[in-house]
Length: 99
Image (cartoon, rainbow, N blue to C red; front, side, top):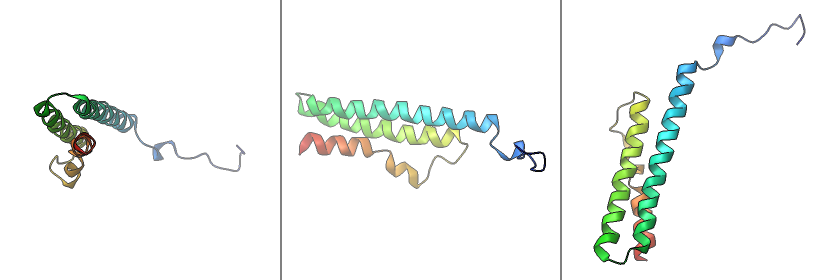
């Protein structure tokens, strides 16, 4: 750093609260989605047909909760087009289970 060059403005970055909010929301989303894909994965190896369907439905519902939690932690309206990505673990699990 040279004396002629002004230092960057420290207030131009994100606040610590905003960084914490992003870390918490990404962590919550990742953990819940891992659980949803785990349910779908369990549906692949279930012996009973009803269990396969039920586990994939639960995976889809859990995925919707993950998206809703992410949006809620950011203070955004929960109902949005992003909720359409929620059932993705259940849909992928059903495709892998019943192909």
